Image (cartoon, rainbow, N blue to C red; front, side, top):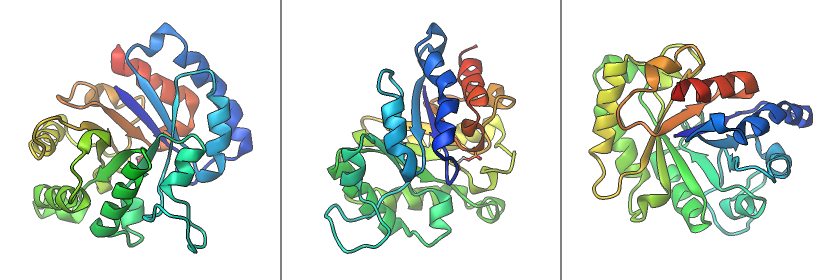
Length: 241
Ligand code: PGA
């Protein structure tokens, strides 16, 4: 089971001290089959990488530029640069970036560039509340998968994170049955080796018991609750208990 911490635009050098608890936990038996991945803001990737030097916690970024080459793109960072400072993962297609104008086509270019740089991709998909209410969840997910993964043959480096937009940061989560059906639907889009499928959106220590037994789910993408080490550890512990 994967537990991905998405810190979004939070954290500074002082927050690194809060990771001691997680490092200790990652070395204990209690972690069981959990694999932890931290995706801090760009500014903290190097510090996190150093901090996690002697443990198995992995590092990812929250986005990257679509070009694999260096270039005149003020303010951007590409996947090669991320790989060179120790990142092994990158979150792409997050709804907070789609909202800012990232199209399926742009996300597809980013995924291609990340794979070329040997980063593993956490590819986010999900419907808005309006789309859900109109019964459009399945066609929306299909479109995001089809366009986002267009002409990408090697799917082994991709994880799908199903994050309903209406669930992110709201405290609302899908009903277990509904989520199970959606995960099943996503799974059916792939032939051969299935990508790992994560769920994201308001995961916390209180609701993890409703989410942990969903069939075919390989882990969670956790925003708010991951910035608090105790809550993050609790989520992992409760997944296995
Ligand atoms: P949340 O965020 O856990 O705070 O809802 C999840 C995400 O946006 O990845």
